Length: 301
Image (cartoon, rainbow, N blue to C red; front, side):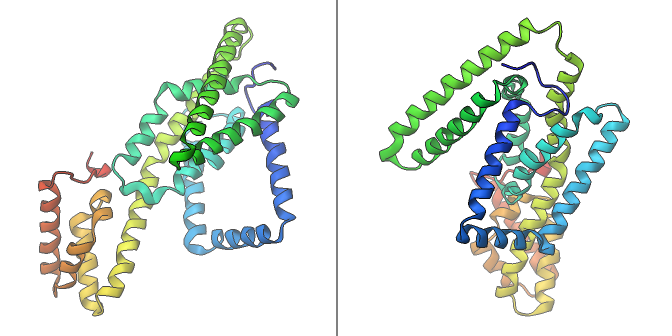
């Protein structure tokens, strides 16, 4: 294994990822059908409805980093890790913002950020094998993980999935054990302060973006409901009343909004004033509180 990689230098594992991503992209670009899909995705990403939130999200992260720098939590040695986190976990969370209304989605995200798994992932990535070894390990473990996921979707392939999960677990425990051994043996020369900053970076960054993810997710849920109302309430004045009633009654309750529809949407379409629409939505809220499975509204937690 190489020495611990702390700072902006790419580790052998990260170089292996870069190599395989380059090979994958270049290979994909040689296929006409894949190129057309790629350009379609690119056009979608530059559409204002998607591009503007992405830009705002990037500006928000930059603002968080700037504040952290002012308070000594961030320095230039963390540029690489910040970019990797932004392009990876941050944007994965961003493109899952429509799940904000799901029960415990954000709480699960926060809990994962604060678990020992994050520490173990950091320790494993602190040390890497030689580049040739990493060139083999990275695609092998990736293929096994993806195959295990696919196998888990069909009962007839379940034994294969269980076997691969065991293999991945053994590999994972082996990497953790080896890395811990190297941490102990190299403790005297390890940049401890730099390692701690890298360890806590994804934790405080993830916690910092939870509010904006919730806001974007909330707006996405509202947009979905408003689009539906456009097709079921044809009178513009009554549609405005319904929208304002939704905002003034359910406001930041993403869980309640995500469950809104069906019979309650039909009842809302039968109202003809803001007062009636609001009364209907208050009844909807009461029904959720009295039901056996009330929604989990993160904003109320």
